[in-house]
Length: 291
Image (cartoon, rainbow, N blue to C red; front, side, top):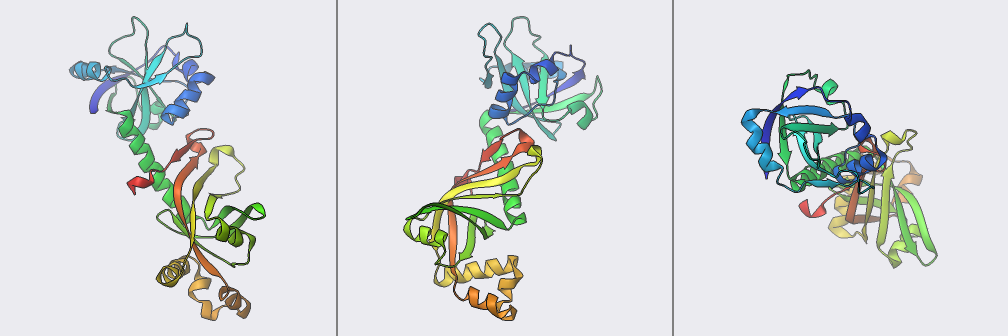
């Protein structure tokens, strides 16, 4: 179910900033909507021509925002796209006497500043079901995760074997969400993989600002490659790391080391993209069955 309505920007009573910064409300906005809200809401009055569409939309259940105190009012949230540019959500308090044409919108940015809005300006809102909003968020996360994989080179590989848990950093190349790497079969992590192919993977930088933190978390299975699969991995690896592509010209010690390595592929069963720009600890699971 989708709907598009138009409204006019108006000045509110200034109570939105207080709501968006209540810890319990903010936590639910982050967890349920993926929005760490800018302090305050944007107030919009629905155009008369779209009142019936808005009334119909309000019959949908929405996303529940539940206060910790039963004496306080609940609210429903509806994910939206504002002006075709910004993801946000309509917050609809479940209180008697609330104006039937009033809309309050949260977003992670100031909508007035980002969209350069003034009172009286027309604003297009595209409302979507929670399922469609989740699919859109997942699509964005998948695109961002692919870009992150391509932009980075080293993953931390966690394994378990006869001597217990172990972690090692290895260079990788990605194809979709499969990760290819090479290692000597005598390393502890390779011996672990020979005994137990289940792994966990992280890819991240050394961030100093928590808001900038992004990264990949993954669990899956590792396969040691042979034949054509190994050749494909070597060719893919060489496109990213020139020393492999030109191994014949590499220093002798490097060439000898490469002659002793084995090639592996991580096939993920679950992938998460971490993005603190969306809120502290925010992460989206990538729907691998959609790939």
